[in-house]
Length: 151
Image (cartoon, rainbow, N blue to C red; front, side, top):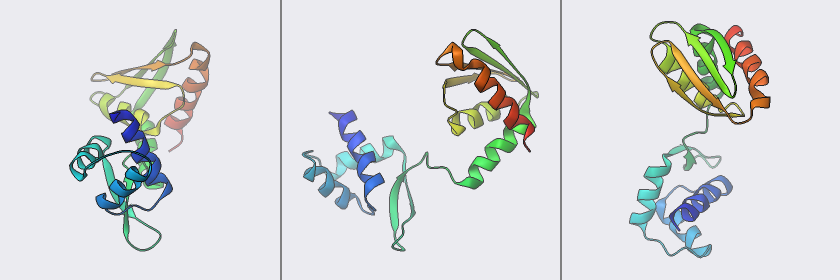
């Protein structure tokens, strides 16, 4: 029930310019969800919704994973400055970084949502990324190497 409701919230905020919780409650009720404002407030917090400018000059709710081009450029700079090498073993990528940079590089990799990377674990200067399909390893490795050389 909760996951279905939260999925519906994301669909609604992507389809409509919702600027109040009351509007969101109304749209959810139209879709058959019996909800209260308190429930929606908790869902919005868990989904990490943010307010962004809407086309009508007001604010609207959006998923916080909506990245600005400026943010993407910052992530790419972090990769360029931090990655020393990228190697593979099976469906695991091992990324070597400068000392103390692994967390920042892993966060950048995760934020860029590179297709095929399921997640990353960072130490001080090493990151392990799990790749969904072994066949994707070389493509993703090449992509990371391109990004690390792009800035």
